[in-house]
Image (cartoon, rainbow, N blue to C red; front, top):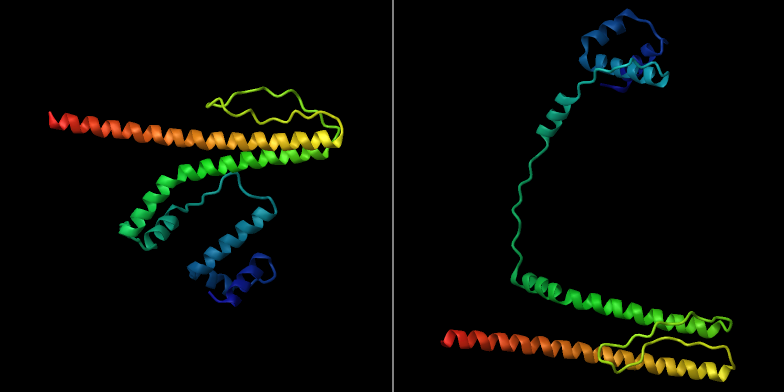
Length: 199
């Protein structure tokens, strides 16, 4: 429908024009009569004069629109050998990456707190719960900050850094011990399988 026909229907709805010829044309043309109905519904909505219930049957139009949409059938592509290996490596390395991120974040938090405490001389932290590491070697990382002169504060920071380094070394040793224990357990399993197959 052309723009001039839209304007004609709109002017008739707004009572700017009264022409029997135009009314006859609207009655004969389905598209113009649908436009006439839509314009009246829009006007009723704007004036808040809608009837209590509207009979809008949109199911046929929606079904037709869905039926006209093209169907796309695409099989799932199989990954190539390189993509398969890459996916397995990522799946294997992901837990280690998560642990590394968590350890880095914890280390940065400890260092950040230490620097903030060193700058604020009025800060007196709450007593720290003392915990022993799994290996029993390192001292827990905590800052027992006491107000005093600057030299004692610097010594406390040096001691704190030393204890932090010892804790990191202990953590690395524990990871190595865990890896060795896992490797020994796997070797024992393979030896048991071999002995069971030889029987």
